[in-house]
Image 1 (cartoon, rainbow, N blue to C red):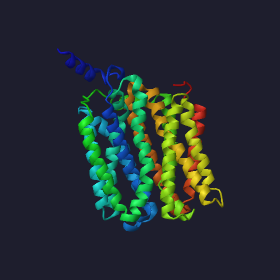
Image 2: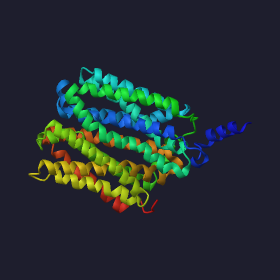
Image 3: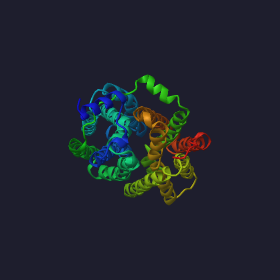
Image 4: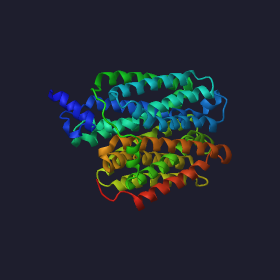
Length: 405
């Protein structure tokens, strides 16, 4: 048997190759994964940036339109384990390509949507792609670079998230105001098409490997560290998306800002999120507890400040910026804590659990946020977010990681 055949058999029988077995990093593939995260996050955030005109065009309330985020999240929570299991015999690059095709289909269907059910169907398709991608992304990074370069690779991949957070809200709001909300989804589909071309060229062969079944997932979730991490994810993500989905509505109705000012503020807050991501990467090298606890604490402080009576437009802008900075640090902190530190030997299983939990939290936050907006006013969602994010920070302080990375 040849060396390459032996290597393949060992990979197939014993799981993914150890990261330090790869002598040369596949940086092109890593960058293509960053493009993939950018496209996914951009498409996921688009409804929030065009929520008002979208709701008006589809003849529904803003609370109902916000549930399009819920549809995406529920589909992603289900697809994360499902896609991982049903595609376990496929080359992982084929799975990635399929997820990109689903993104393109979703955005084109959203652009053509003539009713809320059709738009919801488009968002379900996006959720399938989102869950499938995120469930394997961290484990793929471990197969693309040597072990000592893994933090840099993860930072590059998560940069796609930061850039999407920076670009999507302001550009989506601006383009939606100039050309209509449907144009934003056409642009998203074009970005997806370019990303697919890059991935076709750069992603190397990633043979299928043995993956733990549902019993393996249960074994991972039984670990005390994983339980705490998942609870923190639930609190932070539900708190964030309960409010973020309706941030444009809040700025329009409570702070009385014009669309041009809102677009600029969303751009600034996105930049703050980008620097939050960098800060999270720095903290992750020094203290897991700090990178897991401080971001939700900042978000809680920002939410409370938004609830202060008589807050000026400038105070609201600062609070939104601080909020974005805090949330920008969350992905890298959670990835480092849960996937790369807690159970690195079961990275794909941890990735599936984290993706499903995150998406369930998004759905819960969006549903609860919609109920609050329709029945208690848009400001009420920030009260919930303040409580949820503060509890997340408190949970980390009391039960979070004790061992530094």
